[in-house]
Image (cartoon, rainbow, N blue to C red; front, side, top):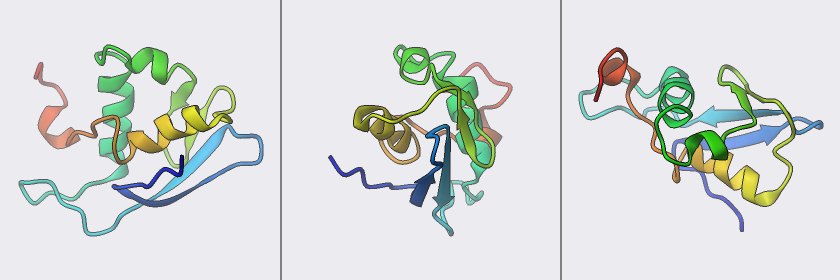
Amino acid sequence: MNPVPQLAESWTQSADGKTITFKLRQGVSWHDGQPFTSADVQYSLMEVTKKVHPRGNATFARLDAVDTPIRTRRSFASIPQRRRMVGAVGGETQILPKHLYEGTDR
């Protein structure tokens, strides 16, 4: 039950549980050589996962915004909820390259 990030090196959560700050792994590039950035995370969660993924809106119902840092409506206090959020930046939920998918219907 100890999540291990893949695209993030680490994360911290605010005392009220509403803000999660991920330290993204440096030096990660997409297959076309473009760098992996927080914009890819924001696009993937807010524009793809919450809108298109079959479980996305339910899984991330408390997710209000993805910026720096990620903010939620209520605490992601339980271990399963934290694992979903951590998985988003490294496992369960796919992070897509915004520069390739934004504005397309793929």
